[in-house]
Amino acid sequence: MEAETFTFMSDLLGDRLGVAAYARYTEQLWFVYEALETGAERLAADPVAGPFIRGELFRLPALERDLEHLRGADWRAGLTALPATRAYADRVRECAESWPAGYIAHHYTRYLGDLSGGQIIRDKAERTWGFSRKGDGVRFYVFEGIGNPAAFKRAFALNTGVFRALGEEFPLSA
Image 1 (cartoon, helix red, strand yellow):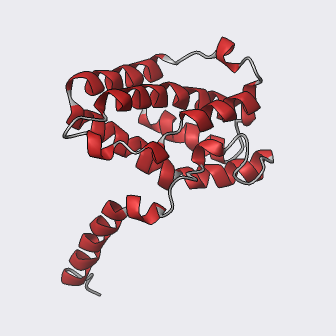
Image 2: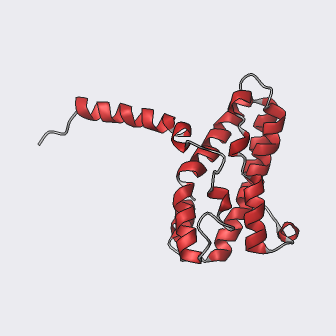
């Protein structure tokens, strides 16, 4: 099952699946972000989750604009979640309702992943399917409200620093 997941993204980004697969993937993201951002409204005042709720990260309006571009004005009529997507969105909702720290794990994984790796997807989609640079079809990956994306990715830099230090402490022998 894991190999299929990696194969999908690899095939999608390698233009072996076409824009219909990209649109379907974008639909699945809508369900996850709908759960995340509906949960965010409930958790804004929570002492654990509240500080992580940042409106400039919200993706639903951009996803909806992308889906309108990809599927047409009536995109909602054909919107269906895969069973795996439904399970993912349900878990996000469950965490938002009863486990704010768990919600933050999902929040971090999704937003940071799309802020980082999503830029590769955006670039490939623009080049492969001719979307305008940071335009309709790829707006989901454009974080216009984030003035300093590196500040959101600081945890990765700190983790990399640990690996660098360990590499210096344990260099490969010839």
